[in-house]
Length: 390
Length: 211
Image (cartoon, rainbow over all chains, first blue to last red; front, side, top):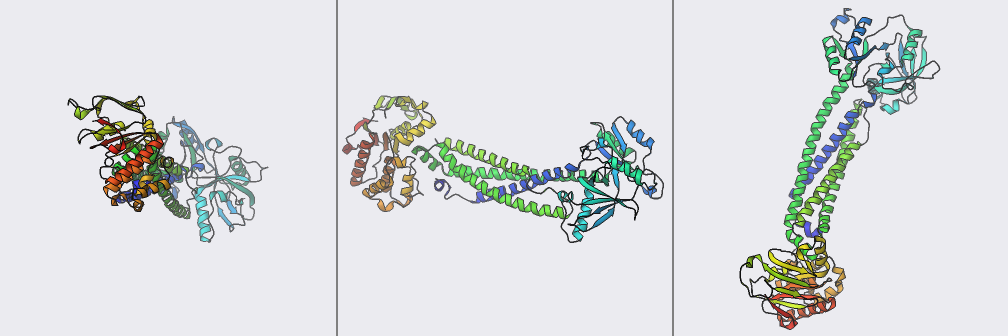
């Protein structure tokens, strides 16, 4: 029956429609996957909820000249706490001792760097308290690593001609915190339990930092240059305005990632819209091609119906033909999409942006939705047209 | 199969007084009956067959197939009727030009339940078109096409054969061969026959109905 209906058909419209479906599908798959991954990027490291910000004073030239203190006083903290739109506010504790992070693992070269440790009250962090706690009986200190630190580490590895570390891999790397002055350093094994974009320093449990500040303090005053402030539900805008009006700002990393994600998402939504439009237009062309075949085959359809063939039998011939075409186009699009995303992801990873690899479920889901919609449309169109000749 | 016509009249003949045994009359096509519908051109011979096959409904009155009104026959029942109970030879033959003789015959859904391909090829040989078996219909003369249409109509199970001037382009010898073939199949299937004709098919011993 395929020969009866599909021989001698003009292939130009079909070729244009097939090309459109291929491009539309490929674009849609890439855009959906990128959108999904952009949304998920850093999601697990969001230790702070949407209403919470890390706040610091805007640093002007005066600070470098010793005019203007970047630290918050008790009065200033209390003043913020009193605001109607603030649910809670607390100073971020910083280390008052010299501390180095040391990588002590055979798989990568020895690496150490001066770092800062910080800690915030547990109520602000979205980490189970049993995972992020410390006492003198524990073998290692749980830490949360800023994602920037991983990018820096990967840059170092790349310069050393070594493979980059993923987030999963680095959690298994042996790491130590070296505390104290040179020659008197005490080693504390550390375990990475997560990553963050909200903080620029390594986060340690407050129990550890308070203990270490007491035990190893170099005599400096408390550094309270950052606060963590949680706005009441629905009052986040008021908090942002207050910061702006009072010479305060959010942590640049935290805002940068959010702005990047927001900007990227807007761009990708544009691409998704474009790809869906392309896809719709090409699917319409494909449906028109079906209608063209059906109108060219009116004589054959009538004969087949008069011979006793069912509408369903003939509809299935068209359904099979177009499903195979769509399946082949889907395979081609999926291959193009897979290769493209491999290239894009390798470029992003090379730039230090560690993404979750693999194909997004939403991409597969969107492909299935398009396929099912196409099949149903073909079924309905073919059935309705054939039935008019019964 | 039994077909009953009650006061059927094509819309185009509405209000015209006709001396007909079919239009505006009651007519019974009996089970295993063999009839020829005799009429000059323009009397509605082709329309009559199209009405019986459910392909047109531009008429008044009522047609019943096996005591069921045509209007009440559902799509799936029509499929069953056309597949295994009714078969037809149309005046325009309704063959597909870009397919071969063999392919046109194989389009019949219940092909294998009628005659198998060996028997068909013997019939084709008997009717003198054996060398056309794998030729496209477009390359055949009208007489050859008419023989192919006759073969296609009888190589499946049926209870009634409806023919619209089936021998119009055949010579005497081929007409005789085709008539004998049709009569043989009618006996095998215990089927009825309804032929429309201009001049009458006297050799087939058919009951004549004037349209």
